[in-house]
Every structure is written in structure tokens, then in C-alpha cells.
Amino acid sequence: MSAPTSDTAGMDASRRGELVELYRDGPDVVAEALAGITEAQLDRRPGPDDWTPREVVHHLGDSEMTSAIRLRLLLAEDDPIIVGYDEAEFARRLFYGDRPIDAALEAFRASRRTTLEILERLTPEQWARTGTHTESGAYGIETWLEIYARHAHEHSDQIKRARAQ
Image (cartoon, rainbow, N blue to C red; front, side):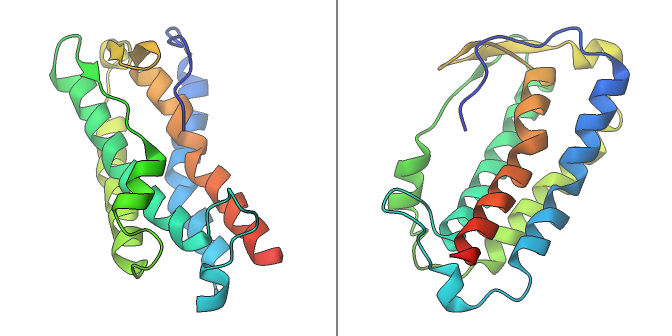
């Protein structure tokens, strides 16, 4: 998922709360999309350039671990550099096509859970912390939340579309 081109500094507490709740719901939304999925459905590719549900789950696990570290860098370092990565290369090189999904789902859930514990404790000053993303420039905690709050929901929809075909 690409990062926005600018930081969203100044988000009010109400909006942050809504996004944190979306973020919190992510694992349940993904679990719902995967409920009762068969091995054949896990490997169904809706189109030549689309990911299978199995690949989506592995992406969610890896992306969530990466996002958890990004948040921690923004909080623990002054003006950190947040490094982008090539999702397609991760998929090719990290065996997304044939690994079982259970560990990736556990990593996704655990990363969300530990990150939520941090988000729930942030002060207004911490919410305003920023760094620089190597692909998009200014990148802060609020930008991070804007991206990742919806990430699982978007991929849940992708899984549902693949299953429906």
C-alpha cells in the first residue's frame, strides 16, 4: 500500500478515535472474510495480476509487522527515516503462494494487539511526531494511522471478491 504524499498533522481526537476503532476491527474483519474458506478458494486468483487470498493473508502478516516497527520508530527516534519496501518482491521471495496461513494470521493479530496497546496511550504530543518516508516524504503517526486503519478492511474485501468468483 502506498503512503499518502503528505502528513495529516492536526487530525482531531474524534477522527483519531474512529480510525483506531477501524484499526482494532481489522483482524475480525479478515477472520470473517476467511471463515469457512477452502484450500481451493485460498488459491483462487481472480485475475492475472491479482493476489490470491493466501497471498493476501501473507501480505497482511508482513505488512502489519512492518507497520508496527514504523510506528515504534516514529515514537522512539527523532525524525526517523521510514523505509518503503516492494510488496510484490516480498510476495515472490517469501513464498506467499504455498505457505500455510495460520502463522501469518497470528503475526497479523499479535502486531495489531501490541500496537493498539501503544496507540491507546499516546499523548497529543506523541500523535504529532513525524519522520520521513523514503517514497513519499513527510510521514507522521497520523498518516500512519490513516493508512493502516483501513488496510485490513481493504484486503478483506479483496478476499471476499476472490471467493465470490
